Image (cartoon, rainbow, N blue to C red; front, side):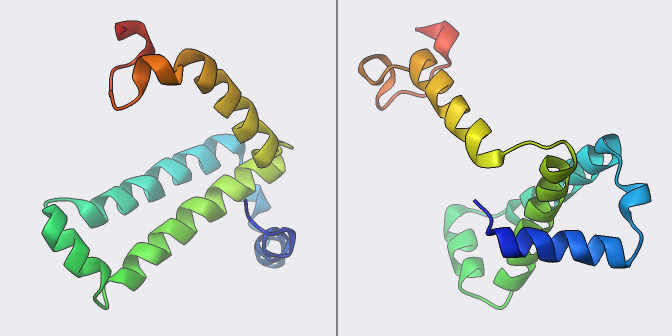
Length: 115
């Protein structure tokens, strides 16, 4: 997902500032949730049309900053817990494929326990 050299830049950035001490798994998970909420806030109260216009405006950079914050905290968490994000996402896709077979869910939004 994220390039190895970018991961290293994040790790180096944190290390140079001695922030590892603040980045416990609990605090990283909290920060990830906060940043994801800030990302969600960018879309709050906007219609699809308003959001489309906002995406083409100078406000897009604020959205991109929030995405970057989410990715940074998730990267720190995966790094510190030795989680291979590509491996776990691939495993989750396989689990979801079993839960949501195409012939039962295509074009439907029901949860696996509702069909």
